[in-house]
Structures are given as C-alpha cells and as structure tokens.
Image (cartoon, rainbow, N blue to C red):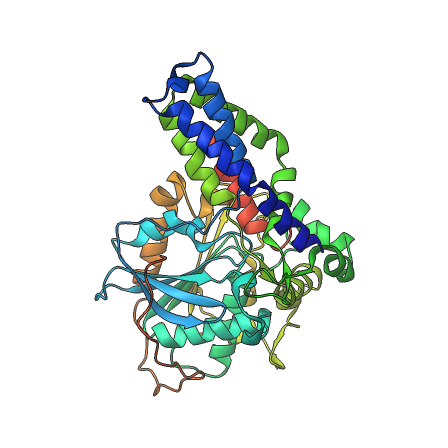
Length: 439
C-alpha cells in the first residue's frame, strides 16, 4: 500500500501545484498588477518552491552538443551513442544502476566526446517495464554487459563508474574464461566496490549490521496498477530519494532557503543553477527487487567476488582468467563512500594479467563525485584515461574467429523524441558531493 499511497498523495497535490504555478505567473508577469505588489517576488518564490518540492521529476535529458542514437536495446537497458558513426576509438560508459539516471554522467560523457565515439548505458525505470518482460537480477546485468560488449566490439574500451565495476569485471572474467574474441581492449573502474572489506565506510558497514531479510522487508514494494510495471517488486525511487535527503537534511533546507532569497533578490543566475541541480537530483528511478537484493548480498554482505566465490549462471567468476583486457583502477583520496583500496583490489585479484596492462591512479583531493565529474576529472583523470586507452588500443596478437555468445536482433528505427543508501550509494554520493559544490 505504501507505493499506492504515495501516488495518491502526488495526485492529491496536483491541483495545488497548478494553483501555485498560476499564482507565480501572475506575480511575475509584467502585465499583471500583482507583479508590482511589495511582496510580489516573495509570493512568486514561495509558489515556485512549493511546486518544485511536491512534484514528481521526469527523467532529465543529456542536452549535449551531439546527436543521440539508440544502437542496442533490451527491456531493462538501451545503449545510446553520441554523434554520428566515426573512426574514433569506441568507449562504452557503463552508468550506475543505482537510483539516478544515466544523465548523472553528463559531464563524464562530455569529457570524451572530442577523442572517442562515446556510448552510454541508459537503464530503464523498473516501474515502467511490464511484468511480462521478466526478471532482472545481477546475473542478467552481467549478461547484458556481455551482449553489449559483443555488439559494440571489436576494439571496444569500457569505463565502469562506481557500482557497475562489479558486474563489468565479472562479465570480462567470464568472457576471458571462454576465450571470447570480443573481450574489451581495456576497462577502467572508477570508484567501484570491488572489495568493500578494504577501508570500509559507513555505507559498507550498514549491510554487516542488517540481515538480507531486513532489506527485503523494509525496502521492497510492489508497483501499483497505475504504472506499466504493475505487480513487479521494486526498490522504489521515492524511498531512495527520502534516504538521500534525510542524510543531509540541513544542507537541503539551506539550499532551498538560499534559492528563496535569490528569487526575492532577482538573482536569476543563482536560481537557475539551483533548478538545474535539483532537476537532476530529484529525478529517481525504481530498481527491480531481485537485482537490488542480490547485489546487496553478493557485493556488500558476502564479498563473493574478492573471495573467489561469485558465480554467474552456475559458473565460477574467476578474475585470474583475465589476461587480455587491460585494467585501470581510479580512486579518490577523500572518497567516503568507496574507501581507498576497494577499487584497486581488482588489480590485485587479476593475478594473471601482466603488469604492463595494469594502471592505478589515486586522485588527491577528490571525493566520490570528483573521480568522474568536475574540474579535477576533466583536468587530471580524463587525460590519464585517454592515454591508458590509447596504450591498449590494439591486440598484441591476431584475434580468433568471432563467436558471439548472444545473438543481437535487428532493431527498429529508434524513437529519439525522448532523448537508500546502500546499493544507491553511487548516485547518493555523487549528488551529495555535487550539492556541496553547488552550495
């Protein structure tokens, strides 16, 4: 009932939002006498803040200076290519499936547009996927990664930002074990929880204090009949958002009070920055229950990957099988979500990968958000990633004949009209750090 009650609450406030928007317009329109009242700006600011605080935010757009094409699609994910096909090296950015949309990596995409043909995973909101599409769990996530690598290869480079580091590394290990010809040339893991036993953070310690049954009981709810995915069990986006906000409630209250003052003072630039940030921050998506729970258990409770106990479709995920795909691990000195050493663990666990195919970078002064966005990322990290990919652009030996593990169906012409703190720690940390920069 919680999900249905939340939807009912949203609908009940709809007339009030419309009234607030009409009042705001009346107080800002120069042809309206209300605009010249002594408190006209304050009334308009109050109406805008009420409307923004109670609305459900839509999926943001990338709004980058490049066209968008859908080049691969499954029920729970599609791959977007930026720009027209070119001879530039191919780079797939695997965005976190952790609450926020792939647009959170807008700055990451922009950093590589000049040097690479960039692709990004655009994960689906689980409440919009019909129950007839089936389940989606961590095993399916790994299957999707393998299928994407097959479709976009050969000579593909992959960058996994935060949470996807585990399934991406597992997919590469399975491909290497089967001597797949389209193993990526290189993989860059940025702030990923490969081994959360190293430098554990408060977020890492939470699942050690709660049994998996607690997460199932308190975090999982069925999608009501008002959505396409009705009947599907999910970890709702609105619960994740409540967790994001509650952990830094004072900062959010201060940010909104500052916006009110900016609007009253007529500071349009500062108000525009606030709108831009919160349009992204408050737009969240649901995760399938099976994916959320399996990831919590496998990655954060049992530490299956670093222990060598992780399995995919009944087969062992052995990082020692990785021999061809070059690996780079990137961490932030001040990352309080993914502690120092958690991502570097991937380099220690790939014991049969030669030293010349490994690289590590610790970005001084950077937090979780700063390792994939912002000025430090653009100036220091992105150039190192580009150099690493260039150094491993071609195979050392000839490739065996292509043997695809997954068939890739023909796609119809794409429609381009619409361009809690645990599993969602990546999106939360990114948003919170961005809020700090915004403030």
